Length: 450
Image 1 (cartoon, rainbow, N blue to C red):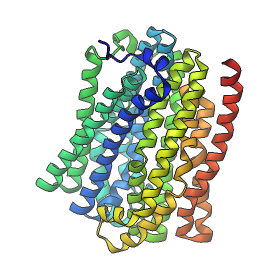
Image 2 (image 1 turned 45 degrees about the horizontal axis):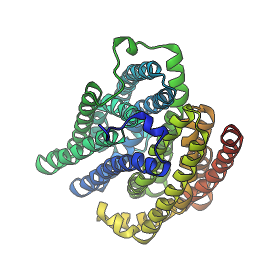
Image 3 (image 1 turned 120 degrees about the horizontal axis):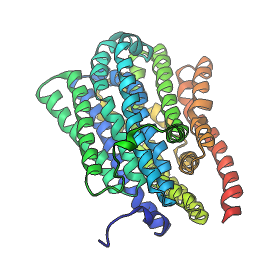
Image 4 (image 1 turned 60 degrees about the vertical axis):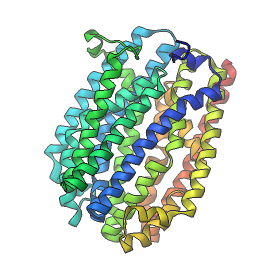
């Protein structure tokens, strides 16, 4: 029993060891999930064709947004759960978790139905034009069947992490990722189902994930044992979940809007080749930064718990440690991507035109990677402590306030190069803004109250 992990550890263990303990499983889970997306794209590109890569990229913003409903409800509720457990208010944690389940089911099913109803309008709007339309439609319809399962997986995963069980959260991310790769091989390579096979592999992986999460919460592994009464929506709980979860939803909505603009702008400037190049670079954005995202995920429950327990010196130390670790990792990733972009692109495709374009695009996109730790940890801090408005504004700073305006303006002067220049410029501006507000909050709250 000495090795049993409890939520109280978040307030007592040494910060450095605790952050590693929380972050490594999160990073491994994100790595496996990212590898799943990466290898899935490699399979599709080599077994179906480069147009299939572009087709999946068109569908991603739609499925991202709907899946983000589950993620936002999960993150919003998990912030409440972490602070409630830190304040020894278990009943509030249980009510929050029950309301998370109900909200996730209601919203993901509703939006999946909406997405299926307007499929022929949504796909072209997100850049699925010309030769991209038909494979995108096949993939889109099947993936949307599994979106409610994905929403529940994302919600359940954050709840697991909120109660201080990072290893089980890692397993919840690994199971569908590994399952998807196995199903990809079976459906695409063995059974030759093409795009439909890739889509059914993804949907099947969501089902595997929710099966594991249901087992976890029904077993004695979890502290969150709810009954039917906790599933009934309560206005105050829903309001708090919504105010905090809206940050994540808004971030994912901006990601979807970004894909919409990028796919359309790049299609108009460079056709299918540019859309495919962006799809490859986008996969690397998801994959390469997995250790930095792991630090961010590990940081959230520690900061939230200690803030709820009013242990502000530990919160401050957690911020500094997380930024330090994340910066070292981000710099390492930056060096690798600057040196090997050509070799990375060849993993996805042998298309000569894409091989000429994607490596240079990748260097532009990752040019300011060493400074992104401040962006990620800064926005995550405000979300962890329940300050929804600052968290929302900082989360939207990079893509919403800087990046989208830049990709609408710069291409008018620099053509397609203007699109890629927008990435490092928006990173610099967002880092400066986030650093200012994070530093002000630390000086105002954490120093005075300590």
